[in-house]
Image 1: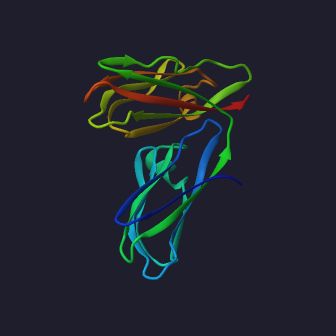
Image 2: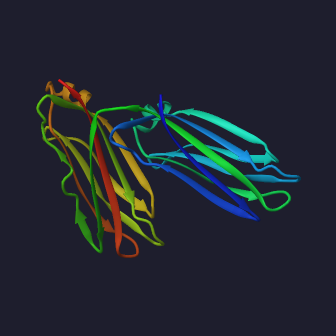
Image 3: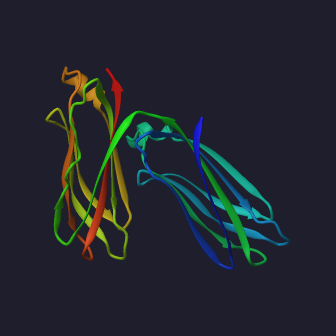
Length: 240
């Protein structure tokens, strides 16, 4: 088992927000997420709040927090349960939420997150731009590679952050020149969208063995200019 671990701790008189981000990586497929929240020790210490797990921009799980002095709560979430539900095989993960003091101040808590992953052979390309008007994607193509074929594809689009930032547009995936998926883009500040396509299944339905992959599209400013976005495309490949 391989894993990545991140931790957050804070003490607060009132309210404190947290966010632990695990970006999608070309050589990792996240499989399980284990979350532990522990309240600080001390007479009369007490925290309340909430915690959420977001996968590829979609809320996958959430729970309240209610911990007295030294109390703790743990959860283990099988990320593969969301593969079919959200049509994602791997995607960025965010664990966020807040704590608030509910006892003798200051009160605090430690949030520890461990994400397990399988190693995969893949290739990732990114495009990012800032625009006042319209900007077209460039360089998100995966030509045929000798000795390999592509089996899966994940597209993730994240809007730039900032008050009033918003983008609209479209995104298209072609496999062997045939349209495999298309969607509109409508993202506010920092919002994300992810989509997974089974390349092997698509090729089999068209009686072809392997094919090149290409993502095209554009973003346009729909809020306070300038707006921006980052598009990440990851393809899994196997030896033929």
